[in-house]
Image 1 (cartoon, rainbow, N blue to C red):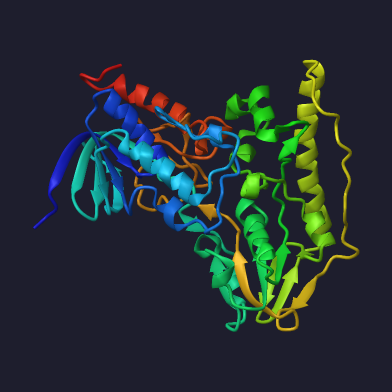
Image 2: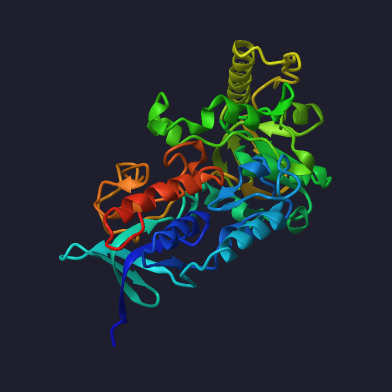
Length: 416
């Protein structure tokens, strides 16, 4: 017997904050729809974050539809459990037609022009589809990771929970995006042996001239600039997030300071042969790149303060606290007592189930503020979908409202 086929105006694929934000506005517009979530709502926040996880942006930036942060610490940084409570509160604030445990296996367009959505349960026919599956489906890991000695435990960043789960001995963290530096710090603060392979990720100040740097950037208008206003939209879209921390009230992370205190830093991992781990000679260059992005943000804030005659604390003096005496090309993992590796080398979306011509040569969606090149198909929750805040709690609601307004214009009986 074939699958039961159901018909609905809109299918939303993904039950995270982006998909449920879309559902909020679809409900408000009176548009019949269904939200399909392969796991449970907010699954990745609950299951793919480490125990000491905190937001790196202030709580006031949490602005889901009709559900702004209303706690007593707007300038703080919610921890994992607090964030889950916030998200669950939003989900319970309206009656989303959410179906959990439903895996979408294919999205295609029928000869009649409708969308056909195949799932692990029913088949769905829809006039319009919103894909809100995000950018973090598949963990990226270099192919040579398979060459690592079987003696050494290796995991991806989404599987790291706490220092207690890591074998005794030295842990090599590979990658310096937000996850990499925070996991390194988590191990460091727990008194564990840890070393770090430094990539080209940028870093940001935390408190600068009397305010959180994100407060300044919001006030300056950086977060409202669209991707089209960036010098190179394609490069911007693929940029790694700046690293800093919201832990223990929030602080910046200067890897040079950690090195001063004894943390072993290496360049990018370039090759692995059993116990031999090779590095590119780019440690100093990568530290300099991180500082360059840090100083660019500082200069942006300094210029704004000066142009607007703002009374703010004096500009601090920037110092490079440490630099490598030489680039390390090779280490013997056994000699260094390396017993584990955490790969913090990023993620990529998985659109293998999407059978519609809407991706570019890089495998990224072709769209304009979430409106794809295919009539009736939309995207939400992507980094830089429209602005810096699109893939974050700050602006996902704005994007969802915009996309649903486009859907409402083409839907009978919708409340526009």
